Amino acid sequence: MDKSKSMFKKFECQNKEWLATQIDLPTCEIMTTSTESLNMPGPSTQKPGRPPKEFFELSDQSKRRKVSCLVETTASHEELMFAARLSLQKSGKRDAAKLLKELETSPKRASK
Image (cartoon, rainbow, N blue to C red; front, side, top):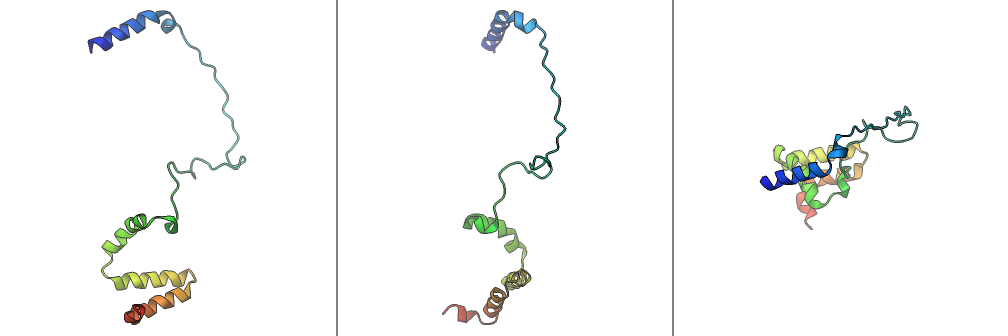
């Protein structure tokens, strides 16, 4: 601690003149142009950090981590299959929904 204290005193002695002077910083006008007119995202729409990826872009490990709460809170695989089927139907992927329904009714057929 004594060494840092002596270094501070040495610094203070060597720079006494400019440390005592008053510094006046220039002021500037703030631009009143809105971010919308510049086609830039405003602070309310832009989130800090890395932008999130779409689910299909994630690695298998990240996908597992993301759906782990679904798997833990859902009571059975039948519920998950039913929810997946409904989601596919809502998004217009009726053929994929039919395949899931067929898997539910005859699961042995899929293993051939």
